[in-house]
Image (cartoon, rainbow, N blue to C red; front, top):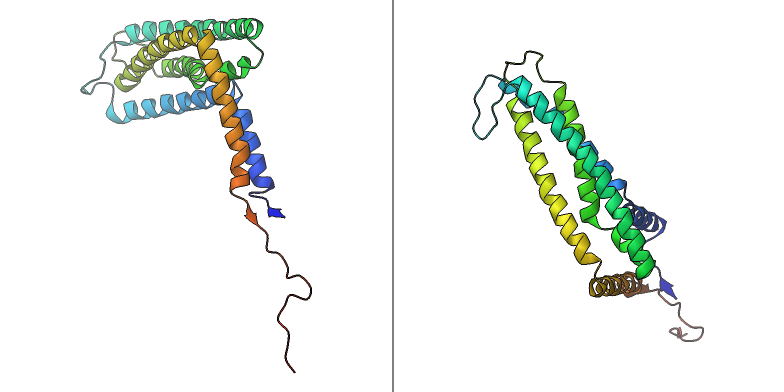
Length: 216
């Protein structure tokens, strides 16, 4: 008899981790929350430093240009998020019909696609929340930290979109699909065998008549 490794808590944790990994909502929602926190943190830093203080490596612009820039980035990112999601769905349909329904899990659990969707939505929320802190005076200075962070997020998002499109085109090739399925099969086999390797044999009670005899 073998003593099982872990318990119900370990099984629940593994199940929750599996559902999060297979979800197109978990990681984008986490990135969205980080975007909200980053917008509030940038606004707080701008309040502490002041909009009229010159800071190195930050953008300097008036409120009119800042409003136009944030509105453009917000509209472009939320539109691109729909395009990226549509490309992901089309890729799932093509891969499922041409190769095997098993490859759908590979595309759904792809961290890069989840990160791109989350970063697009997070950048949109960041820009929308930053618009609240732009002054109504068109010639006043815009918050430097928030504007710099918005531009950096926009550039990083564009680079990740290019990387995602390259990964998507490469991932639909037959050889890559076969390698991905084989790698997932090896991972599943290893995860199933790991608890067995970590099991320890339960202590056996001594058989009747094999114990030490007492001498009278």
